[in-house]
Image (cartoon, rainbow, N blue to C red; front, top):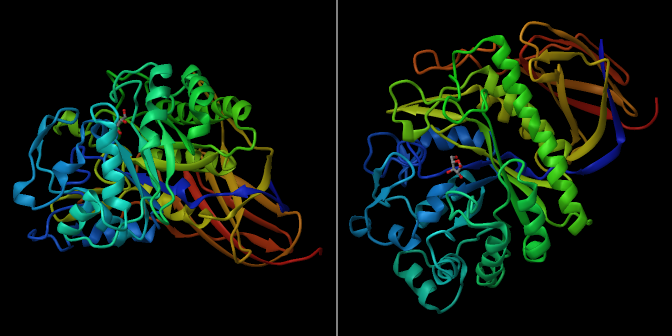
Length: 498
Ligand code: AHR
């Protein structure tokens, strides 16, 4: 029996809704086809955005969307993507498949997408091949309310009112595809560029500096030392590769049980990354004002056979849902420092929540993980501890059988997200609250074989279902979680001691 103790009196910080953020890049079929099909498409759309995709994304309450890259951001010149569509410049998307980018999805279209989703905008600016002036003018174009060259241009292009830009990234992977810079050099560039990311009128911008790749602690040290005072957030990128080898990452759908566990083990490395980067940040920012922004995370496999290698299109199984559960629980548990996270990527790329093919769409197992976790958005993290939890051995070390996090929402409901990572063993569990009498339990589950997936021919093989609790009395509930499952429990309680 595994016991989960929840201290209902101990709040450990707010789980920012932005932890459930997404990332959309001009890469493969993420933006074009996946989200944006244009107004003249036979696929039902509103101002060019697919109605089916937008409706599905609204269900999981996408809180924030990052755009236009990724590596694409440091080659993107925003002025190419505004004005009359027929006159917009065409360019080569050198990073991603060498295809023609016709710029038909630009700033106005992105802001329209955010409007339809009801989410915040996270724009990533170009440091690698752009200028300070270009970045500064983009911010003026989007947010200045008054008479100025860029605000006037925006009005000429049909948008009188300024938009709100909530988050602004100053460069992406500046240590790599964003310019191959050294940390000292980038820290200076960051200081210079961010100076001109102006806050006009009411628009408050949360500025994000390019942070480390995985375990590059020197990068974090230098950035915090030289530029910590000029940033609100520092990004972190870490992808789960089953093999750890970029040349042969492994198949998304064909894997054995050992590879399944190794994939989870590699995902748990996120815990060490958050802990060690946070420890460095703590020395420069003990009040935890600067957020660690995990704005690229997820699985990265070999592309689906027969697809363009530059499009990063991969299938998604219950293994991915478990990877999502591990990461999202870790982000919740570290919400004091992790202020935002963005899965890579939203549609048709890497660990996507949605796949499309022509007019068809499927929700992936990862989609349902986000659906079960959405109740934590803006809730208070509660202290929780596991006892008697089994360990699963892998050739790379062990992983716990259970991952969990618990929060209390604005109405006082307690939400638990508990994943049983075992491929073949169910887990008997007992959850005990320190205070309060359980009045009502709602429970839902995502469960399956580690290989289960949704396809265009069988789109509903994996989906969430109602889950039955074995017993609920006073402060305790008992239940059995099947192997490879994720459970969301919502507890309505009467307060006070029993
Ligand atoms: O998400 C795909 C790519 O991965 C992004 O463009 C880049 O930032 C990262 O290397």
